Image (cartoon, rainbow over all chains, first blue to last red; front, side, top):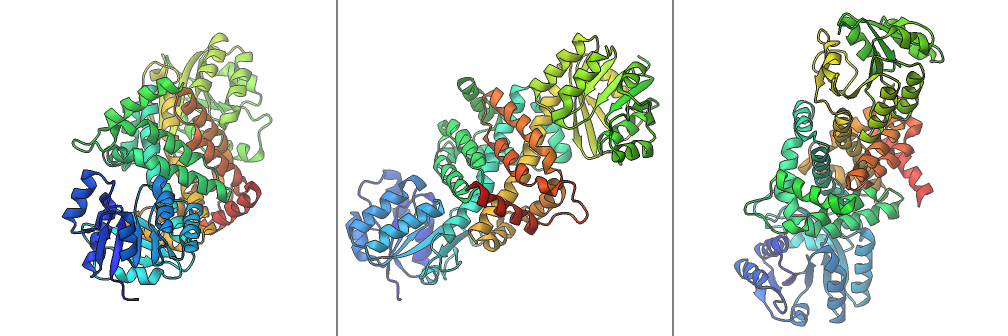
Length: 286
Length: 286
């Protein structure tokens, strides 16, 4: 297939760089501005994406649709595209469970599209080597070709829709859960008045953990509002497999208590501020 | 106080080295062999501890009692000692919650003893720098003096009974929970047939995790039977503080599924064997 036009739905911080990577590879990359925020419009313009206004225009003009949105919005977006009778390749690159990915696959293939499951691991694409887009499905390899020229490392991992989502879930199951855990532990230690002794012991025997907690507060906490849904998807995936859901239900609970830090990145939250917020939340949970 | 005799109850792999450290400091270290296993007797003999037969002899002869036992046995041991009207310093060095430590403190102080709470962090004492014994309580500093000559780093962290247990709980809340999590994630990835891709991605972006999973299988899994109780104590501590219990309830669940590896250290369990056991357990949990 000679891919000409790719629609990116919708250009968030991560998605816009995926769109830009496809444009580097030679595709015309469009998006649909109707109903999107001013911040999204600015982001898309700066990345050189072509605004075609309404969703139906984007669907009609495109051979490939890339869905990159918050996990809770992924199913609705797939339904909207299916209503437009899209018959190209629909790539869902969101952090959803395998079951949700498979449901999305059913919706878009019933409408006549080919489904490719995707999972993004890494940070927004600003230089080579930082970001992988894993793809699975019968036409996964065609999608990787979109990105052969850019800084995004696109990898096909088989023909099974759902595999890319499962990989993303298994990967995120470590990083975000342990960020939540390390902050919860510091909150516990502070409430028990052993936080100073704990950090001293960490510095003796777990020298990475203090740095890890600083990073969790600064980088993960401003995104905690978004991780709530992702942690619930992971918990559901564990449960469906017969494994305990508790690790990620607990992480979702911690993330919910930290949503007030939404997008506060300048200056980034300190460990002390996050621990104080968790301690305050404990008053309400006891 | 000029400490002369210390009773060690009971000489497990960890405890026997704590007893030996006290002996190096000049104390006479006794233990009570009645009802203990052949393995315990061999261990105590090799460490040069003095066998006084029954518990009441050990209690009568000692100024200090060190309780180092599995967490589920800590309360009963304190009750047995209290029944003997022990009036010296009772040190509970077990991995119990703050609430359990405080209950043990009530039991032994009502019988006339002084209570010192303890928490051991590290491995059995074989060389300097590997093991800390944290102590809290009015007479904590007297207990640290027992160990001033040995390889055990004994540290008093205040007068509040419960602080040392809280510190131990907060510390173990990371290490053992993340061991359980990393193995559960590998089991999930294997069931979803993305385990190979996951380990490749880890090696790109989380280079420590494959090594960590090998270590969790080899070192933590043979002790999983013992961690079940400890994880439940941690979950209870989180819940009492108003934090989610799920991280450690899930870890306890994983540990319960791995009790068949009890004490299998030669050869140590491989990641593949542990993942297979978890996958088999999932059949029963779905």
